[in-house]
Image (cartoon, rainbow, N blue to C red; front, top):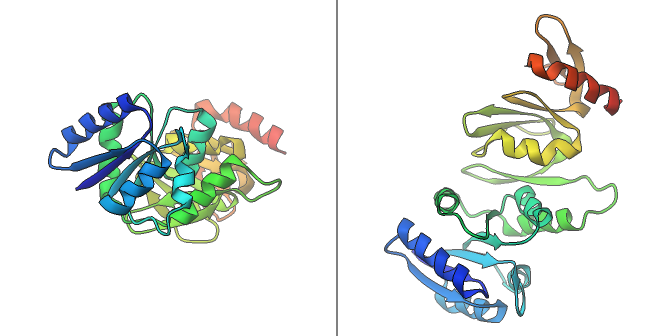
Length: 247
């Protein structure tokens, strides 16, 4: 396996290299320290996986990506920068690591990207751009990946999300369900600002698609598609407050 590390800081490169060799001892790993040297490394080395820093002395990781005719490797963004930028990567489903890199996080990221088919990077990068520079009244998008495909989904079309172990099932108004291998907690954090509410440990709902709240017999809600979702007793009052504010 050919792996490229592109980062202008020597110590983080060395740490990442050592962790990667613990996961893949037979890997061939080469390094570059900036945009220009990174482009040359990709051209000559033809890596299968690239770990790419965001901010470098001669530009950004996105400057590098824009100069490629095609992206035929798996990509992991490495960043030590603010939560706002990291949220953009989460919306786009681009895998990322936060500096200082944690060995366990690298292990799970490495396993995930090895199992994934090549996604549409142009779509994913467009969602990053939209997240960092949102247009007024734009219908925000989120990227969802399963083992077979990459989906660009309008947040407004997500009716509800349902947890099953470390998987999340997205129930959508305009296409079949999508199952992704990420926990519901991650999407709870991302979607709360868009009027999503966690009504139950296993259920996150879009209040725009809620039709009826039945307060009897423990509590449940009916969605516009006819599905019923339980409401946990400790969430009832908070849901009522959220609906009052929402209306």
